[in-house]
Image (cartoon, rainbow, N blue to C red; front, top):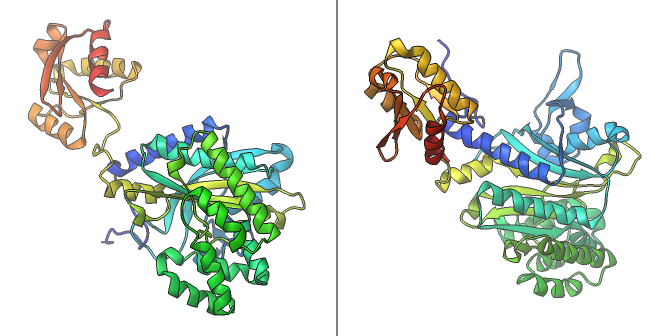
Length: 442
């Protein structure tokens, strides 16, 4: 016999996890749609040349790649942004600009598995293509805030930065051609600390310690937003590109607050760089205040040049991605996930075979009224059926035998409290039962 097992970095999702997982996806859809983002989908497989060289050396190593039956070099998408750039270049003539899309789908990365990070995971992306307007950047912050809030979080921090500030400093230091290795090293600051970051920066980018020190001095600007904005011009040496980045960052901060994002959820953090090479402007990272060690649960930024490798048309973009499975891992750790392993709150016990069709008609009436309902399939003893209902997390059980059916009533049991009540019921007049169940399950 074959031993049943999953590959390292992959996982099965039991109903108790899959139910809230699907609920999170639905919440994300509703939030995205509320801002006018439209759904799209793209293939799992892309030509390898579409994917490689677009993220970083690390993501290139992580691409699942192979030769298909037609001898083509193909890869499985490692994120949803690179396929979007290809998609936009291919279809923008029909779609027009600005084009706002959301995409909820699995991606694959052959990286080392760790808590909350798997080799197959779902991303929930939203992006606006075809505009450089700061309003699109502001809206991205508002969407992140609305998304986390709709999921049920109040304590989270949206960190914002602008790659132009960092790039401007590198220009000032004469390191414009070293930006990729410098930014990749800087992105590890929170993980490996100042000393190791400085060492890695010097080695990877071949710069001297004084230059690394200047970059780290920028990254260590701290305090409230006003204080950081006042420090940045001097730290960046008055560089013109950095100045424009600082100005735009201020506009994004002010606009986000004006659009309803609480100021205490926003943090100007010039140390974040994001590891992907295609970011050119504002970048975001969102952490949970009660579990910061899990890392960013919603990240993204502006990428104004990514589509340029597929088309001559200028297609700037801005967007972010909710790390669905990382967020679920955090919710599990914080005991925020419901324990039910059924999406139906109402359970109908079936223990009198003579009334089989009545149980079915009752359940059909409840579903017509919008109440999700499950009927037990076997006429077992009532105790065994209620044990099943308890173990699966149903909210209410409906119990009816021959006496109840003959007297046009059913018993409703609230499983958490064991409270019982008799409710008048007939197939022609289910309103009393519907009202009683809505009061319990909603």
